Length: 168
Length: 99
Length: 332
Image (cartoon, rainbow over all chains, first blue to last red; front, top):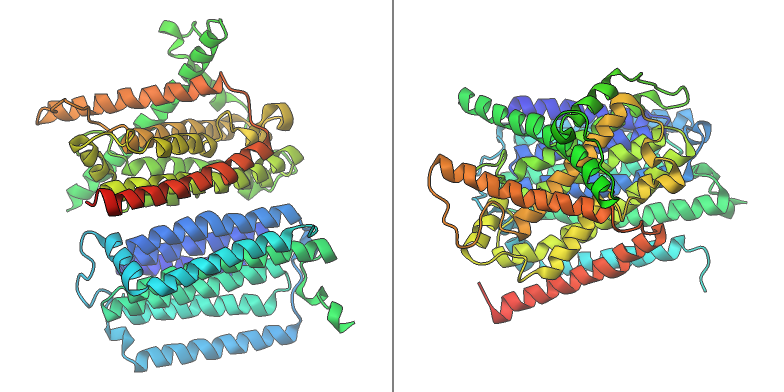
């Protein structure tokens, strides 16, 4: 378990670093897809199998393909695609990142989260795991679920409207 | 493997995503970095849900994925519209209001 | 423990590494023979009895061809792309119960894994088309990604009525339900049609082979590929066909069972169930060939219209109807 956690953690961080430093949009998108697969693996380690499947299905399978599709469609040249922000923002970013990470590790240690192993609440998910998620989703969280569906509908309509060449 | 480890991993990914947003001008890569940040939040939710011993964390992740899907659809639509209008994906060249 | 793991690995290797590629090779032979007979020719009949050894000759030829990597391609992705198609194609088969009690990974979320992994297959095709850095390939890749995303929707939605009826996502229990009650083909005939048509689009087979339409795009995404890299693309297509046929059989045609037939216990029952499964899968593989050599290709916009304006709404209507029946008329 722990070995797999470290394997996928290191892989995820490395892939994420590579993703944000690539000049080439397609390469960046592929590295991000690898990050998503690693995160799905982390979900599996936390025994959230349904989430792992959905993560790969939606993120790696649909969202990233959409990205690839757009990147290929725009077909940018390398110089245009690889422009960076100025050094001031870079420096600000690195400082912010260092501060944030230090603060996070400190807080997590103070809160004692390093002493809570994954799965400490025992086997909370019996055999019909997906069924349990569905039960919670449709009984307890029905209203948020409906709102989410409206959000998706709005997104569909919006995307079609924005990309239409001309409104008639 | 503890909850703390997963949360720190999520934080690291979030930071990398933030760095991407801050340092890149290509709006597509900025969007990708945003996705990274959303995902790391999802990872933290799942870890905390595990600690709480119920499925609420997992359901939050589910909603995060839904919102991310909507966000990407709109975001990419805007990128395409932008590219049609200005033939660029550089965030700094979207400055019509400034001129 | 260690023997358990080793046994599973061996099982996986035998099925995925040996049987599937062999079946794919056999399919290549079948494709050529069947197409020949449909066109009143003989087809390959020289190498071995009835030309059965032709695939081996083909593979040898592929291996000995020069492995050209054109100078204008993006090398890393160009080399990776065939593998990115091939590996998901192999993984998907692992959840299919191909005989009684025999599946490499009998998962609870079986069918979700199928969709999750098979949706990764589109990367290889898209990347292959893009990395080739040629216009025909790029068109093929872009078409493939759009087509596969669109039809994946219909494909996954058409399976939801099955969950509603059987109450499980585990393929083994879907088969068990069908053995007890009735083949899902009968109550869910529209879902079967949608699933079948979408699987043709997902595997890029005629009448939906726009990504490699040879009359417009030379060979689409694999125009620039040669030798073993081309062979791997080719194999992946046939393995996908086998997997989708196996899925159709498992989901709608009772898997490895037959109605009114009590499978004997023990080894014989398992072997018999495997043979039943193979026979059913062969029929659907034949159907793939039959359709290919009978129907013309859809135009690209027609294909998209069919996916978004016909199949998707039909799926949604079907889901609502099934849920209604399940809730009011025939609660489980």
